[in-house]
Amino acid sequence: MQFQSFEVKKITPHVGGDVSGIDLTRPLSSQEVEDVEQALSIYGVLRFEDQALDPDKLKALGRHFGELHIHTGVKGNSEHPEITEIYTDEKSKHVNGEVWHSDLSCDPIPPLGSILHMSISPEAGGDTAFASSYAAYDALSDRMKAYLDGLTATHDGHFAFSRFNPNGKFTRASHPVVNTHPVSGRKGLYVNRAFTSHMDDMPYEEGVALLNFLYDHCERAEWSMRFRWAKDVVAFWDNRCVQHLAVWDYYPELRSGIRVQIAATEPIS
Ligand code: SIN
Image (cartoon, rainbow, N blue to C red; front, side, top):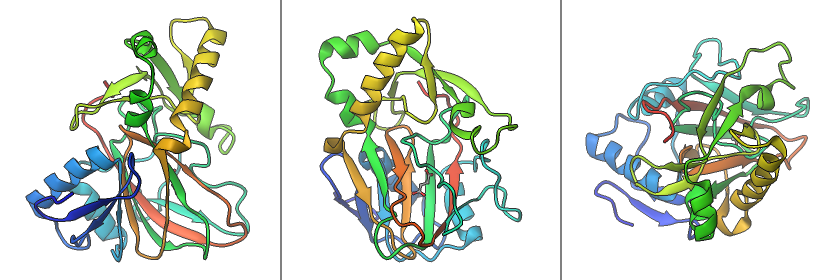
């Protein structure tokens, strides 16, 4: 698809766009910002090559799209608290994002998106998997869509982070199970395996069965993709219409990058 300031090629039919013709290392024009926001709401995740971003440039890029969201579950870089280091080597016991999730859905107002710049990626593997919540919603039966309409679920940071930080204090919030994207107007499923702890206002076991169906459905291969990394590749994903998973298939190799999250101004609705 041709936007005014760059071109995007689909990576798969439902999710992912490869962007060419934009330089993210310098200040963006208002047209470029608008085009990125539009493209993000259509493709869910955008892939950019050859973008040599250091921490200051990554923060400046993120600030075009909103305030930077300080991570509530993981400590930021000591000089740049807005930046989370994504780092895995032979000493790592786990990786960030190893369970399907939408970033910080446990926050009352979760970040609208995240931008990750990769410095070192393994020779093979280390992809991030992304799945379209729009396509998952669209594929449900009309009866299931009607049933889900108006339901809410609780998302709890304790669920995702307490095994790494048993004494930490984490956020918890309730969000609609079906959300409407504020830019595209499309509906999507907003529950995920890492953070959603239970369905609200229904017997716990009934909620577990429903959530397990929805997680399996959201994560299906038909509407997911593998995002391939290399040095200076940048991903910008939209937490309101995709969920993702960091695939740790490259042990003991090194993978290293930096990420900012963009604060939203409105709750999920
Ligand atoms: C994350 O879940 O934000 C990390 C993604 C990745 O490292 O691929």
